[in-house]
Image (cartoon, rainbow, N blue to C red; front, side):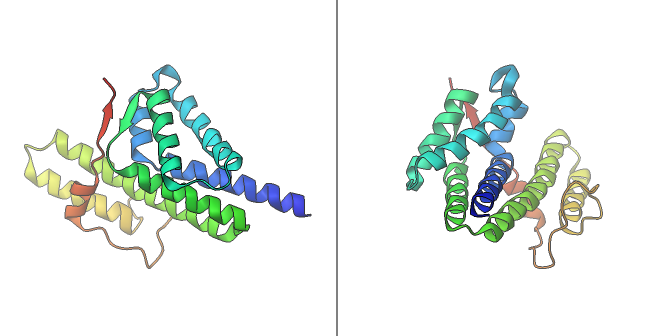
Length: 191
């Protein structure tokens, strides 16, 4: 019984790790733009297992060790230097998940994975809005409409097509100006 629960927790940790990595804009941009070559998507999937394994082999990791490891993987596998300030955030998420795993707190792990997935959906809608703005920056009216649509899609769920889970009643409303500012991620390719 105990071994089964431990395996279950380990699987849950793996799911949470992959959720965090999939929601990481720097990694998504690297994959979408093929910075890792023709196998960028496979590399992103492999990354989840590599990160998971790294935590299991090193029980008491410091935050900067996790950051260095993730940064090295991005540089080596995707030829990308992450300079958008997201490395410490993602590393902190992963470390927190591992602490939940070590304590056997499966409920907390599930909740973290679920929250990250919900947030990813919001970010995706935000990123789409921002990308569309740059195409149509000569037409101010359509930009404003686009921003409002972006907010509607992320808040009430009416404009989403069932891909994103519905945010709970306590989720914060995104202000229009935040979409423009927060939608940008700076990822530079290594020279």
